[in-house]
Amino acid sequence: MDVMKLISAFASLCVCGLLYADWPAASDLQWKDVNDDVMGGRSQGSTSELEGGLVRFAGIISLENNGGFASTRANNSKWELPGEGDILLKVRGDGRSYWMDLRTGQRQGAFSYRQSFDTVAGEVIEVRLPLNEFKAQAFGRRMWVAPPLRPESVESLGFTLYDKQDGPFRLDIIAIGFEEEGAVEVIEAISLLERSVQLGVPLYNNGSPEACAAVYETALNSFLVKGNQSLPAEQQQKLRAAMAELPEDADKRAWALRREIDRIFAVLSK
Image (cartoon, rainbow, N blue to C red; front, side, top):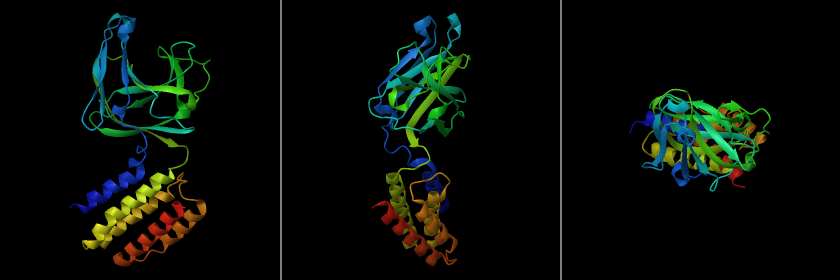
């Protein structure tokens, strides 16, 4: 077992891996493709479900007949945007820039609230899109008279490729999530602590107290990241003081960190 790789993977989980737990898989949503052929264009784009709940949006963009876009969208039937915060995406793209679209029940013209994001060819990346940065657009032009986006009124989400470049494209939609402004949900924090213990205990029992301590310390440090409000400020202060007084000995350090995990778990479970 490569302990360092295991700890690195856990560190990534602490940063972002729990944010998608309460949202449906992309494949659970009912996707509908809308391309420029509705206006006489010849672009072709479609969605397909792949193994593991992944949805692939792929096709070919054509600039013929004044075309040049492909899109897909899903109705809001299994998720909701609870308020201020960020939409989180885990995607694998082709290096092109895409738009994420949010549509409401308003019928004053064919427009959506959208925000662009870049992809890296062949790489899985995580994208953060603040809700307050989605702007109303219609046919690629900003609608300055449209009202600001009201998250609770969103009825569908989708993705559009409209970069005025022809050729094949592919966007794999792995996960879609939401993080409320300035907070990581308590239920996610509890889950993180549980996972740290599940990983740390076997490491300790197999004679690696240093690795066990590293896992526990990584989990606890995630509660001290700026903007994390899952732990009350008073408890954050206590944790910060405890972390500053950790012993050097690996065995004692692992046990001291475990006591902090148990204490915080009790606080969050009340």
